[in-house]
Length: 451
Image (tube, rainbow, N blue to C red):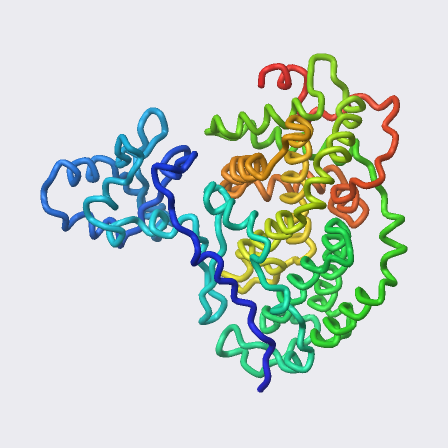
């Protein structure tokens, strides 16, 4: 049986923690889970001051009423300043220093690597909440070699086995399973993301068509095999016949910015807002002209100027940065299936996963536009890394953020193709004359003055 070539990124292997030299710290600002295996290792440590501190710092999670095992076995009790008590004064982990990495809780040992399995193949992405991981991912012009992404259609004539029992099976329309085709679908997704024939916003919009049609195959509404669909979709994209239609898609920067502000407001109202993120928000809001008396109209005008003068020229010179951000996000989220569906075997909504992907991209793009406007001609890769890292530390690890973001898109009627196009497109601003700040969900005047 012939199979498509597996795209197996290895850039996570290049990551090396820089320890005390890091400008942020992964041992503060959030909950640190402890797995049972690590706790068992702690219990056999010989008596010592560190062992006493470990025992005092571990908080076991109570069992649920039905007696089932809790999702998190235990956590570390953080200090009053929300720092891990096992962190030394020179910002090094005392467990690692005295006993080695074998004694670390799994999350501490793995971070910032995100490890998951597709069948018997282990894959890793990086959490960009780590500054060094963000640098490694964003700034590498050859994160993935595009030559590896050429789809060999003869090779996907048969489904790929990601679970042993699926070997040799085919999708039956309406059964709700495209998992046997995981690798072929992802290969097509990554090939599209790296296809610079189209601007990035158009590539991301084409993914919406891709995902909706896959959902139609799942439901049985589209009577087409997956290999046939992938071949025909790639041929249609290559032909350029979709380009005229995309050129007519709406651009509405006022609505785009409104959603970005509302998403940012959701993050600001979450707990544990870190100083680095506050710095990011302050640069963003200053860069879009946020001052007393500002309206959505005035903010949109400055937002458009920041995009045109600073953001767009910078990323036109370095297109790999945003492409790398999307590639890592696709791997991290196991797009377009979604990590939850891959774990449970449930039927995914690829349209929903695409909306979540665009919500993350639109928020990050919005932040970067404002930060570029704030720094002007001095906008640099350091500012990009700072912005992506500090924002990622909030929404990548905020368990409910993506669900809340999707609810916001639905509520705002921005989850359809027209709304997603508005979130993606910045190259044809429209007039917002006479439109005042109308959304109660934005960062309003009182909030703008307080940050």
